[in-house]
Figure 1: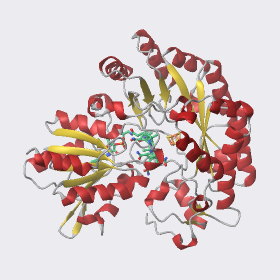
Figure 2 (figure 1 turned 90 degrees about the vertical axis):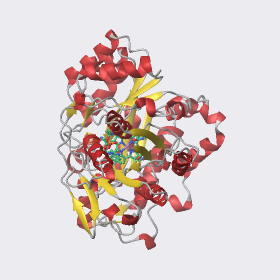
Figure 3 (figure 1 turned 180 degrees about the vertical axis):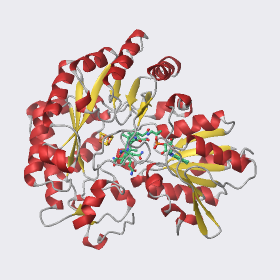
Length: 490
Ligand code: B12
Ligand code: SF4
């Protein structure tokens, strides 16, 4: 079959473009199975997906099916894309994190008019099975994780167990990405290179921790690691075969097993693959690190490490966020990473249930104390299916009424709780954090002024100043009263 695998544009991340790796994995498996695949990522394209659909038609090689990926905030765009494709006669399939949490929603009105199949979970093998079934002219029956309408009923198959042997999967079809259109992975600190050849790599899937805000429906609680040799072989292909200029590790927790993490670094050095800089895009876990790991990472070409710090209050960390780490472990990890010569990034969340002026102040104080190169302050977003969502529903109310509102970098809160929780205060403290970290310290201001991108792209600079330091009328505080109560069904 001829297939388009598509991702809508994540507007909130418009300034940094990452390859949608999940589509790369699906593409690789479908290609091995004999299907013809193109990847369409709206974030880097100048034309809509319909352009390629029409082009295929005009050239006498029409596409048969479109597979669309979506996280929660991308759902409105995913539905729009499915609608466009359906109008042109394609079979439409949806998958990804949001569909894993809420597979039925997209098969109900009004979406069932344009969504044919939905997949829950890791879908490399099951999606291939669907394509083979359709190609053979058969009706799909029981395929792991598949959901579809048959007459007036929804057929829902149980999800398959998570793929146990990740080494058995082919490498993602990195060659199908228009890689020169992606930016470097951390433009906030490095400048936005619009022609970086930045690839991401996944060395493991899953995470055994259970942070209450974290929505990890796809990769789950069981950590599954690829062998070091398999990772090194993919790394070699990226560097020597595809000319990578930067690599980002996107595992949930690549450093869970310290000896394996160290072994990977040693092998990168031995192979001479340490010439291309790499970063940990998502946080490392502080309590699975030591000085030697950071030194080995540095030797292996790593430039920057990120850590999920989340909150500066020990009780919040332990009882509300359930992060499984202490503040001392956070301090130690930052100190060791800096001592090894790595740049650091810290991720902090504002407005978790139970956050007060005092705890948020402690978070700001901790950020100032740790003083990472980049501090990322985020507003808590209650993704459905998380413990945090349940905590809120016990005594509060979610007032985001559109999945598009679930982008965690948008400057508005999305829920309220009992009388001690003040959504407006949360936004004020969040903005204060940015001001105190980036604006009120001369060394930081100087650093920003030396940053070429801030002068060569003034409209963007002003937009960021507005967004992080000032805010606009409709972005301050929570959603308008008309958006309440919650219209979100879980
Ligand atoms: C790297 C990453 C990013 C990168 C790049 C994202 C990109 N372009 O793909 C950046 C930093 C830009 C990013 C941004 C955001 N991210 Co992010 N990100 C990740 C991370 C760590 C890895 C993604 C990945 O490669 N996974 C590995 C692949 C193999 O899995 P997958 O993509 O889910 O694909 C598999 C299945 O889902 C399924 N599948 C996927 N698509 C399709 C399509 C079809 C048709 C089918 C049949 C199957 C299918 O099959 C795939 C293969 O098994 C995940 C955490 C995680 N463990 O997945 C979070 C995660 C996806 N992100 C998340 C969030 C919240 C966001 C943001 C919304 C944050 C924000 N700013 O508000 C944005 C949204 C951006 C977007 N594109 O949607 C959440 C999503 C939760 C949810 N309920 O949707 C996750 C799960 C993190 C978490 N634990 O909370 N993210
Ligand atoms: S450690 Fe990271 S990936 Fe694991 S549950 Fe916590 S936030 Fe999610």
